Length: 235
Image (cartoon, rainbow, N blue to C red; front, side, top):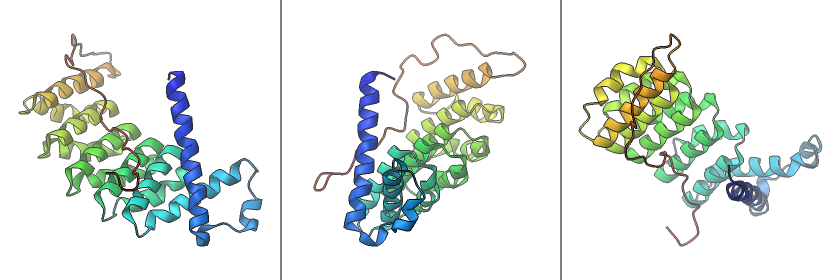
């Protein structure tokens, strides 16, 4: 990672902690007692307090606040937030669900795999696409069957991300479905399927490799772009 990328990553984490600290002041009921914080080191206490405050506001009445809290928890990559973020996948606001999904992918905890796999059936294609990307990041093979079932999704973007996720996870069970995806009506899906088959072939323990010359002639950025923070008054 370049020095500039490291700088901005550190800046975002610091901003997330600051946001959590601000939440404590705005929501006094979420503050910890001195006895609770006493068991933590001086360095841990502010971070833990911020994370707990952010978890609390995932149930805020304002959707914008919930979105920002989910985003911040993803930046902090705290496994402590996983159960609350899983619960946020049921939020009535589509963007909250998307951001919770992204956060779980950032954290990469396999405990979330089953809940995220279930979101592949969400009514909104943006959520389904984000679910596929999150499963790609987590890399848990328990999600392979759900991804295979989603490979015929009505949304092209969902199909692309599903195929990408299957390649990243690298389970041979996906090969028949990926072979079928080679006939998808969308050229992007077909390219992703070629690359996914190549990736799974490269991981074959018996040494049989699938080799392609420049399998992705028109490379594009990896899916699952991190959503931008919500700023009051700006969409």
